[in-house]
Image (cartoon, rainbow, N blue to C red; front, side, top):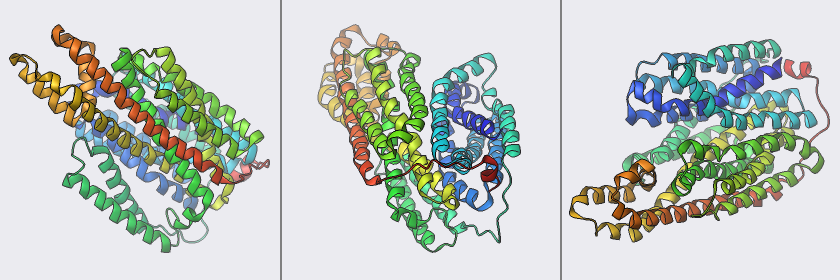
Amino acid sequence: MLIAGLLIAMLFSALEGTIVGTAMPRIVGELGGLSLMTWLTTAYMLSSTTVVPIAGKLADLLGRKSVYVTGLLIFMLGSALCGMAQNMTQLIWFRALQGIGGGVMMPMAMIIVGDIFTGKQRAKWQGVFGAIFGLASVIGPQVGGWIVDAWNWHWVFYINLPVGILATVLIALGLKSHKAAGPVKFDIAGMATMIVGVVSLLLALSFGGGQYPWGSWQIIGLFALSFAALTAFVRIESTASEPILPVRLFRDRIFSVVNAIGFLMSIGMFGAIMFVPLFMRGIVGISASASGTVMTPMMVTMILASIAGGQLVLKIGVRPQMTAGMIIMACGFLLLTTLGMETTKLYASGIMLVIGLGMGLVMPLLTLTLQEHFPKSELGVVTSSSTFFRQIGGTFGMTLLGVVMNSRSDALLSANLLPLLHDLPAEADGLEESITHMVHTNPQSLYSALLSPESLAQIPQALLGSLVPVIKASLVASLHAVFWTGLAFVLFGALLTPLLGRVTVSGRSKEPEEAAAE
């Protein structure tokens, strides 16, 4: 009963992001507020990422059941309010509330699996639970499209309610309560400084180079605020009696190495997820929906490798499997640098298979290793830390690789495209000014605009022969720079794996009733 509840809860929370992404155009079409659209994703990301380590600590202090059920209830309340939103501002605030519930739910399933099982059973189930995220990525867009077409966008959020109620009932019945012994001390100062520091950092990474220049006072101020708050957080955590994220954990080699690998892997993973569809649309010339299907093989192999990896680790050990997974991922990124003008969809899908295989071998081990190494009293903190550093890595990766992409594109397009614009006829002055502005501010929008069939149809045929080859060549070279950068981070992660030492996956297992009672 408990495992069924955990699987249902994890699936519907993982589906939320992909389903909402599919419904976004319809939501904006009805509510308006196009300029606020990015906040629908940003609000959820900010609240969910920030609350993850807090949820892990509260789970250790108050028990798993009370924290998990509270997270489910907040998530369902946020979903109901999102469905009733009358304008974009309301929807953004309700998405932030929903994100708090989602952030509580993210690490809880893995924490409870660590409680209930040890060793062989834990490895198997964490592989299964890890595969849920891959499954959500595969079916989410289809489910979101079907809901929007069959009903309306409100049901993108309302659909969470019956599923959430079922998961809550199963978890509430299957997981026994835990009552803390003695007074519970909350690290309020640590929570406050961590929230300010993380939110400021994520905002700076999200809006820098886009809505605000990197050198603007807004972005510099956010980075300065983040640095000051996180510095205060470290000092507070060094003396707190019940710290949210104990500083001493970073002196543990396995804790630091595992979270560093998860951080680096997430940078590379988001590099593939973000930029391969852009390549397929701009160079291969397939539709946006068809370019998304190129990612499906990666998700499928990640699911299969996550499940198989839970069994394989018992035979070959944590360090060899993690090393192999990171090297396979690195090989996939090396293959991405071979994409060119003649690349086919089949070849790109094959590369995604390789990357998915590497990811699937590594992801379940990040949590398993920490749970095998640390005592049960710290299971919530160390498990949530793994989720937290992977999310931060994903955000950092999207920002860094986006900067690499724009910087390389700016240099190439300025050297090769802008001189051609000087030869345009006088009536094309508006086009020249528009393209020049996009080259220097947002090259990705230039690629999207000029490489779509609709936009190409509006450009005079005489110009297509000179402009389009230059734009495509710049896109290929810029994406190669992105993939080489992603490869460097993945290789760095692979080089860290020997530092793990010997991590033993125990063969013992607890009775579920005994562990759940704790």
